[in-house]
Image 1 (cartoon, helix red, strand yellow):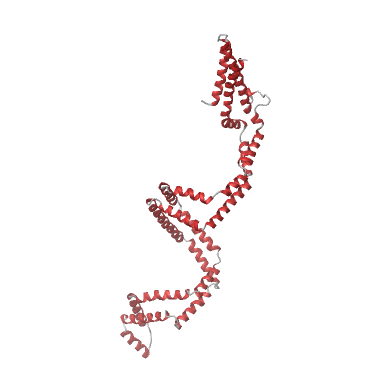
Image 2 (cartoon, one colour):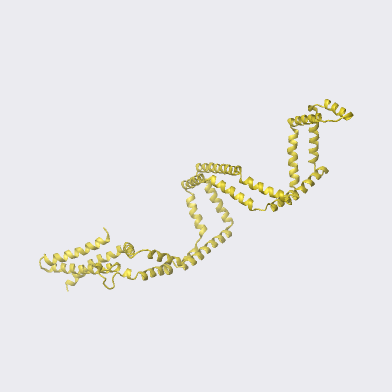
Length: 411
């Protein structure tokens, strides 16, 4: 039963008791005793009903002076509430003091330690990571990456980049490494049996095409008739392998001449404006191609599948990787206590500064919320919050009045 009904019931009991003892009970000392008690209880209950009602509204709708006190003093109440919150309950000095004493990272680590020890929670985190990863729109992501790459290439001046690359190529030994790589690949190709046969057939066919007259023509034709593709192939292969070996020997004059030519052409690349323009246009065109977007998308798909497989494996393992990761972070934090302390102080200092700058917003927020409420809504809210206790004043008034009335009847 609501307190308002109890208060109304207490008032009704006093009224009925007064009527019954006044009109229907015999006139004797105990009837007069009860009558005095019910009469005083009725007066006390009505008086307290009037007092409680006068706080929220005009009793019976009559604008009696000094009633509907909450609405008449609405601004004073709001200002008092804001003042109490800003200066006593939530004053910025006490908030700042509490924040400065706060062990932010220690408390955070303690809380995470308790949570991370639960297998179900660890698996839940990994399952959430799986579902989130599966919902990542790779098509949009790959398009964004390609768009970023194209925009980056378009805005860049490639001449300094080419200069830097050519400097590394020339002055950090990349030219020799590149030459050695090409020679090694060429040597592997020349060694093959099919390459030997290819050279033999090619040389023999070209020699047959020679048109030389006189004694020289006779000698050439005799040589061609004597040398078959099977004989020419090993000869040419041997010559090429010997040349490759020679070019691969450090200090060889021919090798040095070739390296000098490579350096010369490499250093001249950035000064060729037409070549740089074509190179940049080629890079932009290549980056914008469908093939590049498809390549990015496939790599992202592979990466996602790899991560999903790893997450599934860790789910079956009970999410121990989260425990290991947390322990690793804790160990790193212990080895960098001074840095962690500086970070913590910086964060707390920022919070304190933010609170000092925005503390007035507490009052603004309270005032805005109260101003959005009309009189009826404000009264209903206050009655819901404090009306229950106030209704018991009516009950107490009726009971106390009854007791006082009985006591006074003796005098």
